[in-house]
Length: 335
Image (cartoon, rainbow, N blue to C red; front, side, top):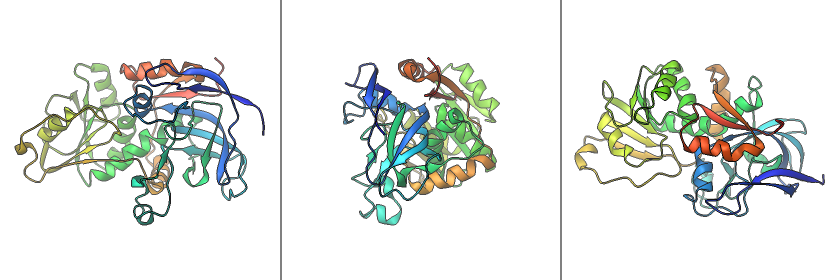
């Protein structure tokens, strides 16, 4: 297949994306050629575009919450016939041979490559992806509503697993990931407490509309101690705040790939067997398990849709906290 495609391209960190015409990508032996249908806009994309994640390939097509249709593939492709709708997540490749990959912890592979960072992503009409890291999508979701499942859903789900069997669960930063995760947590009979930017009454109303029993400012204490807290807001100062909010033996899970520095805090906040841990990327098992679970909840995604050419506007809205739910690029939409 020959030709060209529209794409939104990062030429240098800190600069707006540029709409360009690029040659169609050529799939490698085990890669699928994909026609992108939608791509959600993630906070990690902001970290890449703003230069907080410092080693992206340049030029780069961002985007790692991809919904696409298979239109071709390399000579060694054995899965996903032409016409299959698939999702592509952040983890785009792992070596399969290191001590992490061989025990199901491919998310920690030192040679891993990431979609929309090391590999061109979904802010384009076409992309390529390794067949091992593409996943069949539940049929009950439209393209734009399926896209947030591929990172907001997957990373939220892995973060929830890291929170253990916590009944009283705090979610700090009520954006795309939290709005999916609250639905899963409630299905699991957990109680959810939502923390937002101070004074963001609209986000607090949104959290309560999805079933959170309490919603308040991120610097406030909840009405009772938490068993676990998950931080989606990339603000290091929230770590000691969350430690103050969790009960003895509680866990604070940092769910983002980037966070501002964590300030010093007294050991007393950590004592009594409290735990602080991070979540790195995802595994294929996470993807298969979550995508099987989502329709049974059922997870419903709230989306604000932008055309591909408005990717910069979508990023700005996310940066300024004006998106409740998830921002999604509808690549098929007319500008």
